[in-house]
Length: 218
Image 1 (cartoon, one colour):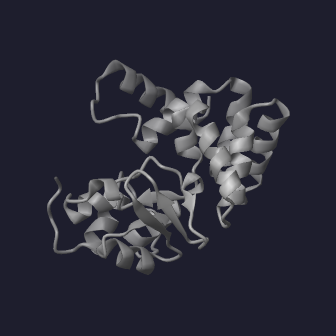
Image 2: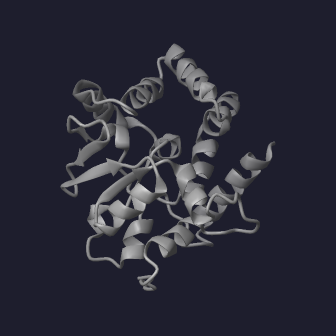
């Protein structure tokens, strides 16, 4: 059994046992553990490649494998890819139809764009709101005619896809919802110096840089 699978099983067991009440289905690490635990053995190598292979070919192979078996997750991945950089109202509508039937943890870890500074947390301290990871998917948001801006029907806010950390920080300070590549979090937290040892909270570090005058955590 590979290291990430052992960690996944350990996290899943800890969550089920209730030993750590901070772990929830909305936590990305816990979602990863549950996603690996839920799929068949023959699927795990494909899922691992889809998540961790940098070229994107692993994700394409996984989507094709799912489609060959008539699994709606394959269609969802294809739609997500098509909607990543372009507006297509029909495709977005179809994806929204598919999502309720998909495993929530699986979709959570497969998303490649994270929504932050969620409008549903208006009124929260700035650092707290910035750290909130919205459960919505960029690909399933309503197109606006601008490929870098989409609309959320839940919080009635526009969501701005940010190409740089500077843009993300500026929009967050204006109270706007943002969509960012997950890799941006560690890069911005460490000023591009790479991964720190231990268990650093990169998102908290980035939030402290974006809102240096706000030290409230609740």
